[in-house]
Amino acid sequence: MTKHKNLSIFVPHEGCPNQCSFCDQKKISGTQNPPSPREVERLCDEFLPHIKEEGKSYEIAFFGGSFTAIDREYMLSLLQAAYPFVQQGRARGIRCSTRPDAITAEILDILKEYGVTAIELGAQSMQDDVLKMNLRGHTVQDVFTASALIKQYGFSLGLQMMPGLYGCKDYMAYAVDTAEKFIQIMPDTVRIYPTLILKDTLLEKLYQNRMYTPLTVDQAVEISAVLVKMFNEKNIRIIKLGLHADTGMELGLVAGPYHPALKELVQSRMFLDRLIADFATMPVGDYTVQVNPRQRSQVTGQKKANIIALKQAGYNVTIKENNTIEYDDYIILEGEKQCI
Ligand code: SF4
Image 1 (spheres, protein in one colour):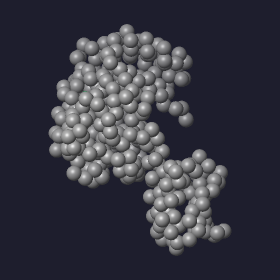
Image 2 (tube, helix red, strand yellow):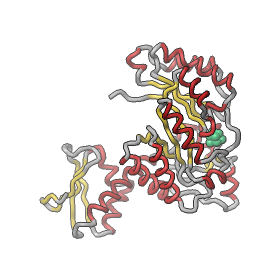
Image 3 (tube, rainbow, N blue to C red):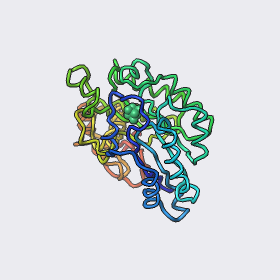
Image 4 (cartoon, rainbow, N blue to C red):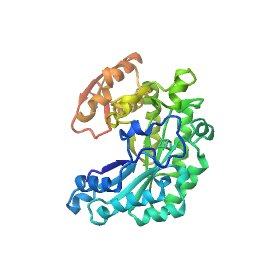
């Protein structure tokens, strides 16, 4: 299977009609100035492969702002700079991220014409009160409407969500509600970004004034594990979990559930949830859990967290590698007897 790669071009704060409570897009992207069309051409020429076969795994990605809300002439100039590389077969398409209230049939016609294949909407929350409190400037209905139109046009649809936003009365319940509404929409992909507090944002002020408490890493892991399970069950592909450290974001990070290996922690938590459910039907005692060698650390948990949690429940577990175990699978053995 060919690995998918994005040539990410950040267009910071271009097109944003307001400043959302959590966002300092310049810090997230690590970019200060919007790219010129010439810069887009240079990046594409430098980083995209010349061999057509290799180009099939690349997409040119305009991320960072609200691409479809930026000045029309500027948006067209960026698309015109990128599209020839799609026509030459050096990339299979263009993707962009934007706001749910910046999607119309007219805009989608333009995007179609210039080789855009995937559109990601920053939905962030599917509760109107939370959207309002975080100054998003759009509604839940905007997400439903824009998503339906994007799908009708045949674009790949991505939705982004941010568990732990200001105004959520119950972080888990609100995240699950957002995921349920995403599932009604059935996007092709989702991104899960537990909310972080960045410098010079409204969230920072609220946090300093003790009006907002961000998720802890443990809470973010617990919530993300539930969300990943929900999306996996519906075959909705999760393309990102947590922000990457190499985005320049770390410099402006004030507080919040940032962890460089959040995804690994979530996978580990999912194993623990499964093991606890499986062991619940078994008598306390000593067991061996055989796992695929590539997942030994995930099953064990960071600093043996899963082993410790199981021990506290009365199960003395030894982890053993077994090459014949499928990825994401395991078997539990009691002595020589196979229990599951
Ligand atoms: S619309 Fe997106 S890029 Fe613009 S301020 Fe809000 S979160 Fe940031």
